[in-house]
Image 1 (cartoon, helix red, strand yellow):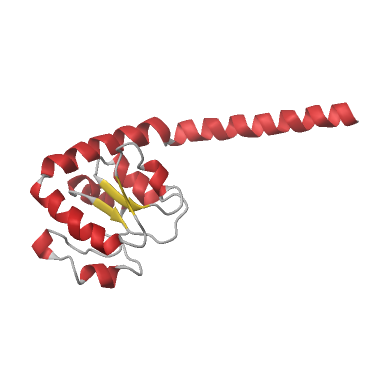
Image 2: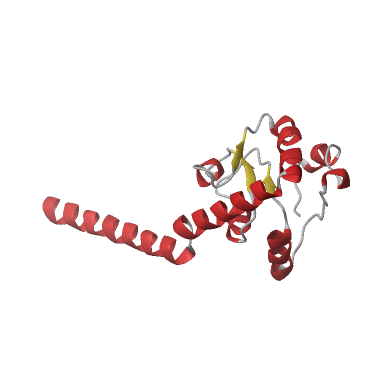
Length: 151
């Protein structure tokens, strides 16, 4: 599911023989969630990324995740919450990893459980909004304190 500049090169190597279906862009949110929950794995081979919302969505659905160490995605998957791929070696790493996932579905299930746990612990919207509000409050208080001292 999804699209990007690496699809043509990856699609040539991985298809139905690996149990991979290339769906392209899926607009309907409920359908995306349904697909993610049913998937054996989620692969994000980005070369440039900030913090991928699609990665967080896949993790929240309990899907085993493999993503490049682009932007903050590698940090999200640290400590066993997923598999971090080298952006320069995606194809060769997937050649090794995808057969492992196919042959050991228990590994994908365990990674999916760890991914879901990580995203619920660290990336819930309500928690992040609260942290952001605290940060803004601290910055405003610091600014007010500096203004009252210098003013």
